[in-house]
Length: 226
Length: 356
Image (cartoon, rainbow over all chains, first blue to last red; front, side):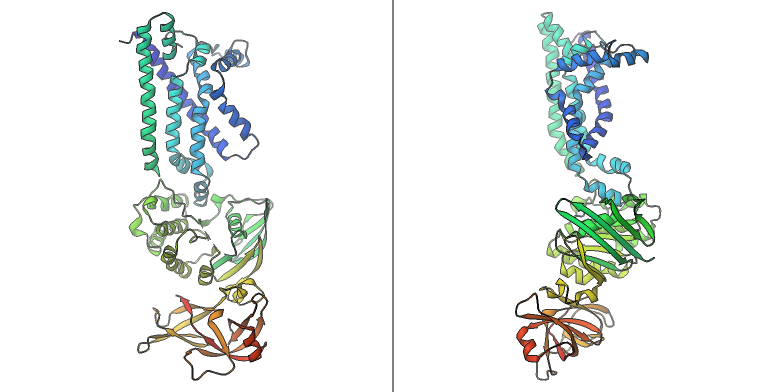
């Protein structure tokens, strides 16, 4: 069965994916909302930046993040000055890399969901004395709930499945940065094909179940809200 | 104090709105005009859903918009009914009614019971909007707008998205609102039927401008406005139900200009009604008709005539003891009877429709 190292890697992966999903829920929601509502000239450029990780090789993102977060990078100097140390090759370094890498998987489904809600419910809420913030929480949030579920599941699953960025920023420190995908790579490098098989099967089944959940549950959820 | 002053200037690609209106803050004011004439945009400006850089809006003495201030929508004491009911799909009917009430400290429970009763939505309270018919949804939307205790009710073509049968289902409720509401109502429509039925005050709009505004009875009979020249031209007459004749199955309506007899209608004795008389249902004679099947023959005087819009036809404005009626007759009849302003005539009314 799975070794202790394997379980440790899986546990780390789940922790990373949970933290990243939570952070992106907080960061992605206002950005997706802004992208939906704005008529500003910035909508195009910002939308493109959000979508960049979809097409960029992970090594490009990893390279820039390493430079930024390294001891000589502007962000690295900041974290050093604040007493957090240097972030690459730590769990929080992985978190930051993954947040960037999974950004579009949170923002784009949310943006689609917000666009589907439309302007009218907000206008109605305003004529019923609700402030814009109030309307967001009592009208937009419940109506866009299926979008939040989709966005969270996709972000979580995508973070579990990432490899390139994690390897570049985190390396493979057991219990700190060695996530499941990296563990498989390490097994393979060491010709431990049986171990690699077991881990790969776990990730394959996990990914399939997540997508199955998404495709069967989401239509039902949408029906129940609407 | 009791009035609405609205002045707006708004330019959009391909459309311009420029209005300067003084409206009474009582009764129903109908904004009437063809699609795309700016009625809805004007309503949205008044509600604050559309922001104009130039404008001034004062409602009952309080400033909602001028150079230096702009009250946001959620702080304006109004109720708004949209063309589509736009109920919140995630809330029940009751949840929808409560949404605004919870946020409006001045709303009272007793009022809500009355509103629910007035619109007949008591049995629907537990339902989700998806399980309501189009007409029921719009009634809930009206109740929801009233439930916030508004000082002004705004209705943007509330019946336009409904089929004929659903319209007939809602109209009696609107008549009731008209009779029982003490707050002013701004009502947008392009339907002549709704306009003549509900309006006390009328604003005629065209291409982003106001053609004319004034009391509805006055405006409908003004021959210089497009309405009096249109196919649907009709006048409004305030009358009282004077009695029924059971033997011949008739109903009598009395008004300042005399008595009108029609086939029996459901109406209570003494009830005040609004009669609507189509210009094409009125014909003229120089002498009272004695040997005729026509029951309604009333003396009147021609005020003016106008025949520009319809080839071969002339529209006349008639004075029946101060009540104005419209008649549509052929040019030839006008020549044969030698009709001109001041001519005494007898008015023959074929039929009327009425609103209680």
